Length: 67
Image 1 (cartoon, one colour):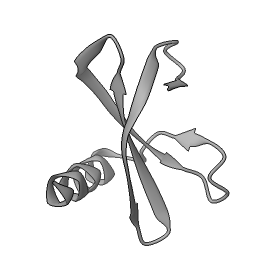
Image 2 (cartoon, helix red, strand yellow; image 1 turned 180 degrees about the vertical axis):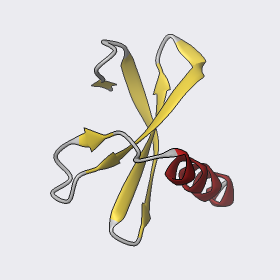
Image 3 (cartoon, helix red, strand yellow; image 1 turned 45 degrees about the horizontal axis):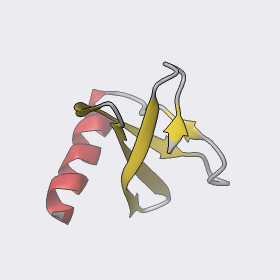
Image 4 (cartoon, one colour; image 1 turned 90 degrees about the vertical axis):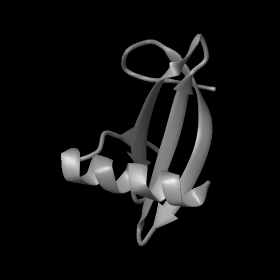
């Protein structure tokens, strides 16, 4: 379980590495319809937001291809 800037707790649903980026897929523990995607920093210490809509679409495609 991890807390984000919105003070909501999330489960880590999945992690997918693509090149030098690890995308982390998170699901709200109180509402499974509420999810978000973050990426780790280079040292894998912090979760950062995605850069733009294009990166969000890429992360969703990676997730779809993993199931």
